[in-house]
Image (cartoon, rainbow, N blue to C red; front, side, top):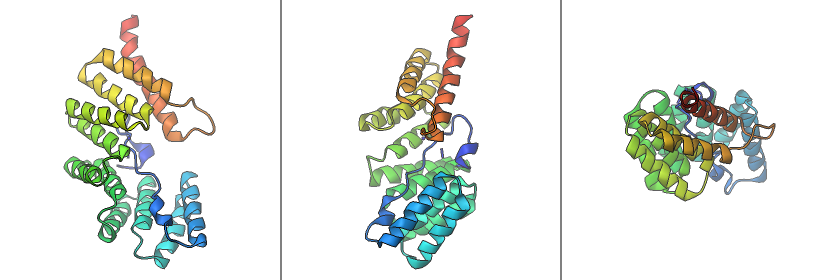
Length: 230
């Protein structure tokens, strides 16, 4: 799934996914702190990044040992294009908790955004060693293998991601794109069509990332079918 430079600025083949808001940040905390974490998440989802960062900064000041808060703030820095600050927060989070898989996935997305593919692969693999069910890391690692031209390795990652039973539309889209670039056009068309069945139709309640991916799949599919219709 795109995450490297700001997610919205990535090219069509770079739709890596960050880990979702780290739920561990709310464990064992007071009700006011849970409220403000939820508020920071809502501000980030509304793209009010400066407010979300300000809230998390206050929470970090109160809880300087919270790896999850640093991870979440790093994710917002990343999404707002402040890559250096994102890396700094991810590294701090890992110093506080080197066993939190989501941090490695998010930092890997940063490395991929900066073209540091070797570092990205290493972090995705650590994330999966720590949490083999982290489907975002499986998808992101598959995209990275595809970027390297390692199509068979990419397909293997997407096949396993499908077994996990989440984000099927995203997985079919990325596996289809891999088949497409590999020259396996029939497999690509089949996966694109599966993706369009799984991905939600555009609406006010559909996440923007799903809108972008669905549109991208339609473009990829049209690229394949157009020559066949001439």
